[in-house]
Length: 245
Image (cartoon, rainbow, N blue to C red):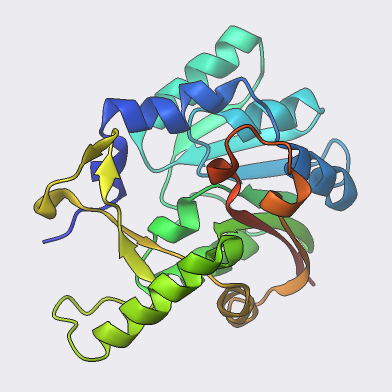
């Protein structure tokens, strides 16, 4: 049996890496550029998958009215504590991205970045998440990111071989471009504790976004925009600007 994202983030090292260790960084340059271009200043923004609060804190510092949600209670607590320590007024709640506890059209914009969508499976549930963030938003723009197979050539080769093998032998019924997380907290994960992660290619994401009612206006690859990163391995995201008519 495979694990889920709880297995991954229940590890203290991983939770710190993706939570408090990043919380003080604020918006990445690519995110800041897209927010300034796509979001109405001072608007109501829902941050889905807030983690330790990095994006939520950055958005609030820019003057947006921010509501932040995460599936994991530890991240909800960390985001609340971080907001209080910074004197920021945020509404932070625990919620499932596929079943958000908000009325239709409650927000002007949605931001859902990082690894969230890759943790969701199967594909129809990922599309449900995309439909749900559209439901709670007024007509306008959202920013969503995914990890990108396009980041490195060998990623493409790896998944080409893996997908080919799964057409022959796939006892777990995994989807194309699913991969197990091999390390948790820097250590090799046990076979029963391996969360699954879905890697996206841009054509697949565009199809999923369209099926969920979105129009993809543009996309930027962080690893092309931020070439001066000290650790290029952290930059493997593609950011999409989505429009709801």
